Amino acid sequence: MNFQQLRSVRETVRRGFNLTEVAAMLHTSQPGVSRQIRELEEELGVDIFVRAGKRLTGLTPPGETLLPMVERLLLESDNLRRAGQDFVSSEQGRLSIAATHSQARYALPQVVRDFRARYPQVSLHLHQGSPRQVAEMLLSGEADVGVATEALAGYDGLVTLPCYRWTHSIVVPPGHALLAQTEPVTLEQLAEYPIITYELGYTGRSHIDEAFAREGLAPDVVLSAMDADVIKTYVELGMGVGIVASIAVDPDRDRHLRSLDARHLFEVNLTRLGLRRGAWLRGFAYGFIESFVPTLTRAAVQDVLASAGTPDGAAARPA
Image 1: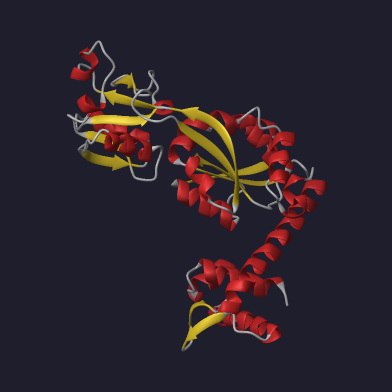
Image 2 (image 1 turned 90 degrees about the horizontal axis):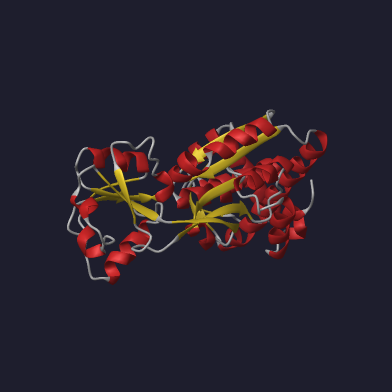
């Protein structure tokens, strides 16, 4: 049994049993992947995968049982490597951050700048995606730290920590009728206009939909996008009223727009920081987290990881 065999099994599942993609991921050949899997099956005495001719189509019952063990072995292998790197060169390495577009664009720039100044020898990689994609990058090990909405809390394989709360704002062109009101905007008034806001699954969109649904309203969402800058661009063109995260409104940059507070209309949102359960964090990863949320000190994060039941306290040990 060797780690290449274990990686072949893990990647086969992750790549939807497509051995061509597995081979590309592992920098080997498709016959090489098949051989690694078959040799492991022969050593264990069981079939891990269901086969239809030469194709793999799923996991057998033994395979379903063995896969979590394979994942744990490979995770601990990564932990050993990272722990060793921390002792050899504590301020050198690679840190991968996964975040939603709004977090990457509006919440993280200063954090990234400060981190680079503090750890100039760390290669920082920033990936963007939906909350689901952020969670998947964490679970696969592609990302070390994830930043997204409260949707991250729905994944058993992740440990999440609260970062900060935020609300939505309404953005309109200058001279819009909603700006002339002396009373706060109501959902009924807002529903009279075409709406431009986030796609489903992004930046509190569920709270927006839930608020209208509670009032029995069906807003006319004429355009949805992943990024607040895109939403604001089409608001400037007069296509509708925008609903964006308040952190995405910058009076200096958005001189051609006006904003209205919408915290009374939609539920407050919570940004969370996600970590893969059981993964070892390099010392500089704790530095990044504390730069983002000063109250999330290394000791505080390690306490949460320890209470979350990380295997052998791996992620909670000092590095």
